[in-house]
Length: 506
Ligand code: AHR
Image (cartoon, rainbow, N blue to C red; front, side):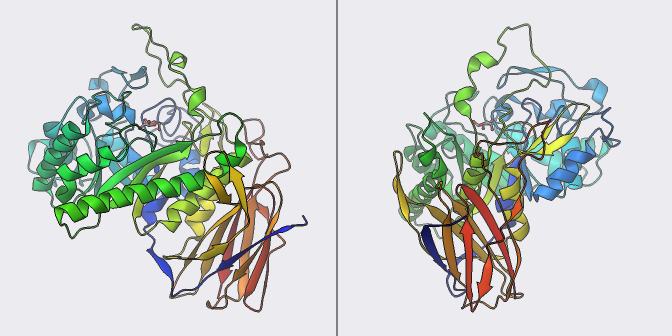
């Protein structure tokens, strides 16, 4: 792969973005389609454990390297009654789910999901319903989940077979309340007031909770900016994070812009941080508001029309196949670029959730009664989670540019690097957004690295290739044999449209 273009990266441990919070590698499981039912949970499957959870899926979740899991929604949470999902199974009601027009059997609820999360080695992050419910239901759920014993709801949890409290630290105050599609959709003023009251009540139970205020559901919402400002003015002193949500897709065949989705994420994060800082100045606050980017991914949203959902009032399907996007190499490179954007903003983005985890716009797919497999987007996430060290470096990048219709002139290559002070271990993540190869020189003279332990990536002759039930390994990581480290200079050639992860040891 001869490269005509060249880029340069300079790494210096004196220049850092900040420490990396492992919560950046979170994900999301919603009661939606086959995420839970016939996804993580399929009693009767040959790989199911005693609770009906698929152990093959659990293995893949661990391999993916997920740190936190947001649950149970998403749009679903805005009409969810959490009480339906606890207690003896035979007493749990079937309910209509207004978000996705689906039958909710409540076979899985908080206690089961917390057990699943423990087995997956992840931290549970909960969302409360501020759509159809409010302060009382949120505080009740908190009492059930976190109070040790001796109260009606903590004792109910114990009676239901969960003696130890779940001790959930991170709580989302509703979901996308700015979106007309949301049950209980409202304006920023009403939401900000309700969220602040709910946060204050929850803090009476536990002052140390970490609470997430809903920001905009995407940067092109008409209320973006004003929503954040108004909601934060109400709740600044009682919340720790404001959320960002964004999904990216190739529109009208404009692949060049799609491949630069990381630029859009950079701008979104920087705009939300600036808005939060403005409110901080106005209110004369010490605290810096953090960002929880708790929904992000590629999602071919335009392919999902409301007509895909059955809207007959008498038909509520169980675990329908919804939002089951099949991902390509291009999508994996975009996801890699989004991970780079999150890492480069690690000082402000302290938590993030790849949306979602299994079957629904997911890195992991399953077939009922059959196998589970990795989509293309699985690999950049797994690389970044596995190889990221404790500090994110503020790297200097000089790269050729190309012109996009949506974002103007953008760098053809983007990069992030992490480093561990104790071991000197360093990782570098790179995407090449253009079709021609680019050779990158990484100046590592200021570091102590001496060897390339690993250089691998995702690229393919057919950038539209992806993994399916019949061909689960059509796209897998490949060793990048061009990587060489000599005299403090690492050179690597990035194939056209590719993701690359480098692990450097001292
Ligand atoms: O992740 C799918 C949906 O996208 C979520 O339910 C919602 O929060 C967002 O609009």
